[in-house]
Image (cartoon, rainbow, N blue to C red; front, side):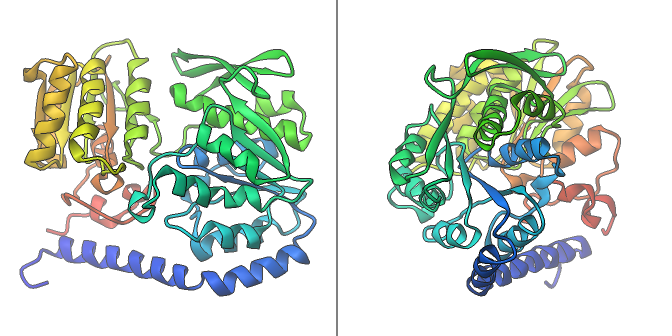
Length: 429
């Protein structure tokens, strides 16, 4: 660490500490699974547990279900894997009639152990897509097989809540004897997404349940908001919860932190903060959400997009860049090396955006200076990148918070880490 600034030394120690905690959490899974399994067979057997998984949308879906159950909804801060997931399962199945939990995986042979330990009565699968791909050489088939363990673990009197629009999710229907309840745009779904329309303060979603259409006004943003809302209503229907109550409850749900989270900036402009995940599917969903804002210019700060398919990088950047060029009036790329930047830039030009409206920022500080000069009160700003980019620092600075952190990359997790990180708010140089 010789020659490093105090800020960089402390940043490295913080990141090392979190990795150490993660390693210990992983090593404790085996013993904790035994404890949780015993708990579910004894003290926790009376709780009907709803377990939510999927490549995308599972956190917001879990929060929507929690709102229906009258539980706390700030669940994005709660770990969804390893021993901390199992500790959460004990807490959720102690003294409750019905509870919900989010279950995530990072590699093969994890879900079966979780499912057998927590013993869900209702399993929800939101979507299957490219994530953790380097650990799944079989591609989407391997990812779906892993997540299907949560459905296969259901008892015969359980319920599988499945996305009718996703063929990989519907494949799971053949992996269980439990009852199947579906949601999605497909007209034969049990909960049908009829329409999704942008509103000034969120989204209007029309659902059809048992032949009756219901309008849901939610603060969630974009087409992607429909999946969590529809899935949670399908859970209510399966669990015997009054649908009218469920619809009122989900309307109170606030956007998930750093998942298309609308933030008002100091000059009046609206920022959509979406830098918790950087996968192509979430990027395209964010672009589509931004397209629904017609006031002023649409400006995007786009950070690193990890390779999440077995294809070369070029097709990924070509798809994303072309769509970005169609949607945005101005694009500022950040933290990209020369190769990815040029691929992204050329694709955006092919999408229709003039070359002079595309540039690159080498740092958060440079991006903030550019935006201060260009961003108008009526504009919409999308901040989209990998979680290591920590683009939330840009929104914080444009809200009037004095951000001191200059790290180009930070691996410390947590959806709102930057809001209380001492490196962000304290000058250590």
